[in-house]
Image 1 (tube, helix red, strand yellow):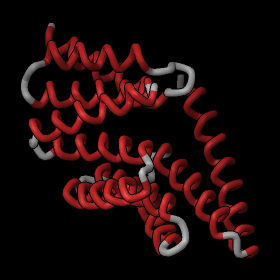
Image 2: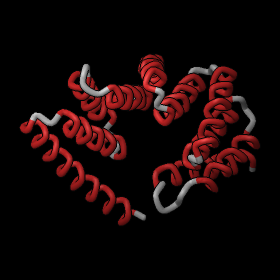
Image 3: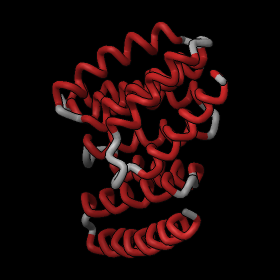
Amino acid sequence: MRGFHDDAVRMLGTAADAATLAAERFDALGDGHGLLSAWTEIAAIQFFLGRHDAAAATCRRALARAEGHSAVHRARFLRMLGIACYETGRVEEAIGYYRACLDLCRDLRWSTGERLALHRLAQAEAALGRNDTATGILLRCAEMFVNAGDTRGEALISYTLGEISRWRGDEPAALAHFTTCLHRLDPLNEHIWSDRTRDQIARSRAALG
């Protein structure tokens, strides 16, 4: 497993170098869309590597360039900036970015962006103890994922419901949600979420004896 992790980090480093070079070339050519697409890849890699402050810096830089250029890119970077804030403990700030993303997605009628932002908003609300609000958002969001045939999204809904159940002190329900999440994830393409979910299942089982 250690070898797999090291290989993955090396591959991500190579991908980051390629995306950075692409960004420089797009910038030199004055290709704003290409530049923003390259920055999307760079931020995603930074997230995978746990470099959340670096990802936030990339998102802020991209938002400054995206203004007046690409509404879809702005929505995407607002959500990603929210994730960076959430992962570094700035949950209220994350909520602000998620809500801004949601407003823009709805203006654009971009349902994919809307449901992704809704899920993140629910996660943040739950982290602040607003479990009823979070659950209500998740129910709406789950329906959107089902209608879109997005099984990965459905899996992440189950993961967040597991977190909420644990925070409410209902470990059996948490275990059930985490188990559902793992069954819905694609083990070949969702290494990070699969590993996180297995850890949560192990934690639930240990708590339940």
